[in-house]
Length: 227
Image (cartoon, rainbow, N blue to C red):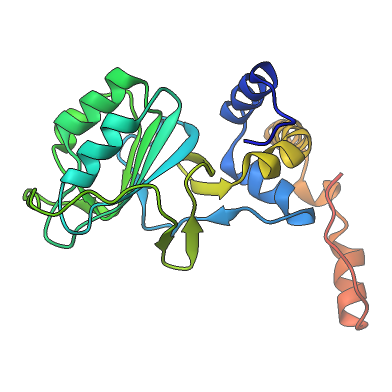
C-alpha cells in the first residue's frame, strides 16, 4: 500500500470494492491499466460470497507446510493465493476454518480443495479448480511471499484481489483506487438500464448500434455506446 493511503482511506476503498462487481471493475480498468484476471477455471465453492483482500502468496506445490506458514503469518484482510499440488488438495475444512477464525477474506487455489460439504458452511470464500479427496505431504519446507505465476498472470505479495461469481481480478491498491469511481458509475448506470429493459424498453433504444455498424462497414473507427 502506498503512502497516499491512510488507514481510513484504505478502509473506505475496501468497503467500496466489496460493493461493486468484478465486471464493473474490469470495464472501468479498460481506460487505465487493465486489471489482471485469474483463469476462469478457478471458481468459487460458494458463488454467493465476495472476496476482497491483499495477497499472501503461497507455493504449496510440494506440500502442506506452506499453507501452515501462510496461516501463521496471515492477519485479517489477507487472501491466501496458492499454487496447489497435482497430488491432492491443499486446503479443506481445517485450514478454511482457521482462515475464517483469523479473518482471512479468501483462499484462492490454482489447484484443488477438499471437504466441499464443510466449505459450503464456512463464510471464508474458497476458489479452486476443483476438488480431490487426497492431500499432499508435509515434508517439504514452506515457500511463501514470492511472485506467483498462475498461467499468464503474476500475483505479487501485497497485490489486491476482488472475486465473485464471475471470477477474480487482481491489481495494486493504486490501480483499484484509480478506477473505483468509474466502476461505481458503471454499476449504477447498468442497474438503471437493466430496470428500463425490465419495464419494457428495448436495449436497442439505448445504444448506437445502427450508427456504429454503419461506421464499421465504411471502414471508420467507431465505438458501441450505451445511453
